[in-house]
Image (tube, rainbow, N blue to C red; front, side, top):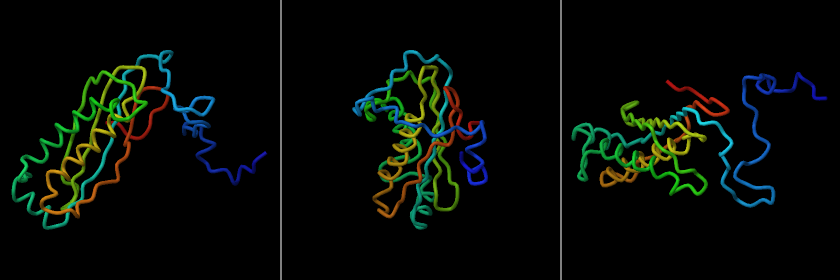
Length: 178
């Protein structure tokens, strides 16, 4: 029996999800497989992912001075369009993602400080599986698009971290969802 004084408090808290004991995309023989979601209930699901794009100071100043436009066009609008397209095509990019009907996809892209754009992607569906990968893909592609739109100004633009901020629906709720 473990000494409870040495067990992290989160492992004793029934409200904190426990780590899974196995990977869901590996079958009993150790081969990759798509998860069978046919027995899961259809529920409303939402996932929010975020990332950041950090610019050298001169590039951030230039973008502001140009109304967030580069030689390639409007940076934010193009990133939103590319991110939305990526959300809808996630199953074509990530091998074991299920093709999902996307009920909603919303981006927010704004300065979080003088040099950093914060990108947030919220995705909704009503289905048997969640949209975490869609939200992460959308945020990632939006950030890559910002980089592509601005790389003529500098290659010292940094992306990340990219992370799941929250999800609701399914077995577990994670993080914050507004």
